[in-house]
Image (tube, rainbow, N blue to C red; front, side):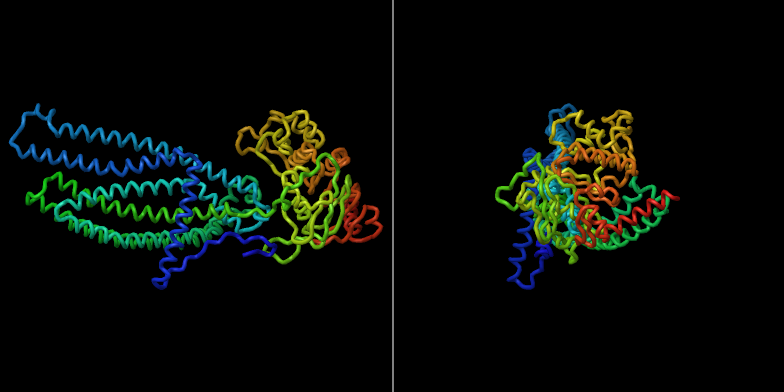
Length: 640
């Protein structure tokens, strides 16, 4: 299924339709369990890639835990039967106890318990370590995948649902699923051992079959509610995101001022409460429904066990079996019931877990469409001027019908400076994103040095541009690193960092920071982190562009947070930076556009005017009207 701009629609789960007749049963089971084993195989590979030792540890512990309960029961049987035999005798010298079978069995029992305790502690420690490593592996996969995805994916609410679900599964679920799977192996070994004991005991073979039959409804209920729970959680992703959003607003340090001043706290608390009420209502119904069914089944199972415990006790009264045998057989019945219950719950939990792993798989299957179209991608020739051409370029966002840009035709010559102006929503930022190939045009093409930008290697293309976005990054690292992020592949060069800061006027305040360029910025991780003003951050972002020293300079509202004097100083410095380079800048202050060789005026996604400042003023069109309006405002402000 494909979207409006030729992009594949997001991953969808195939809904299983229950079989209506016997013919449909086999295909239904094949689809049901086929999907399960595919998901389970994905989990095994994920854990194997994390560390082979994890699977070996789980295998060993599965075998060990499967055998040890039966060994413990047999030891207890031996101790009790030996004690009954001794009691049946009149008396034995106390010294004989130390050489008796009872004493050796007791020593064996406590050695067994010590081994169990040590092994259990070691297993818990290793599982915690393995859990951390699996979480790391999943998060690395998510981060690696994120860096490959198209920007268009991040504009899609369905993608955000997948990403939220995938991040939720980055916890211990993969390891938990495998642990529970190996626990099933342990339980099966234990179950089989106790079956052997019960089938060889007098009159208890039928009891075993009845206990197993009573457990069947529990298995059915368990699987039904695991499926319901998964479906509910999956389709309530929006409510969970809303709850996270509303609760996050009140603890967001950047929003706390507005929330307090405008008295918005109670509003968002109320909205959180309303969303939670809707979310909780359905979840509570599921929990109560499953609990009620299991309560009924538990009563039936309890009555059944009471009957068989009574039968075994009567055999002790009649002298047919010994007290140790009573302990073994009743323990075996209890263990068989527990094993069946464990098999049911763990199977349901594993099944539910593998369904949730679909969220991670769906995220990892998100396709990247912005890729080089050439079989051997071209490398952009660096350290030179470049020519850019838009040919009939139109763009609309996926799932929408209105063009954000429509039939744009223009050329930016080598070494030329172009200013992009227009009101908010005119399409200026989208124009920049298309040029950077963060999106691909819906129609038309963009040429760089005469070749379609789709033919170039993406990393080579990106490295050609030095850009300051309107919503530039503010990184919680040192001032020096914030600047060096402009070109992280270059060797560390403090002289170059300081020069970039001087060119953007950032050096004026960085030099006064407590640790200078080594000062951590933002009080997120470090107690001594420094908070900067909007204008200071903007100068730092401009320094990043100076440090990048790329062939094509793109400035998206680079001085929006600066006062007019600082703005003029920055533009004066940028004259040096863009000398000989192709450069593009977006600005609402049209006084800045006067220095451009070419001014492009966008309105409602269309190019309506194109020329130098003098040419456009002579035309007395939209640009002249906007320029005169701004000039009049400044003159009025000065007169006042």
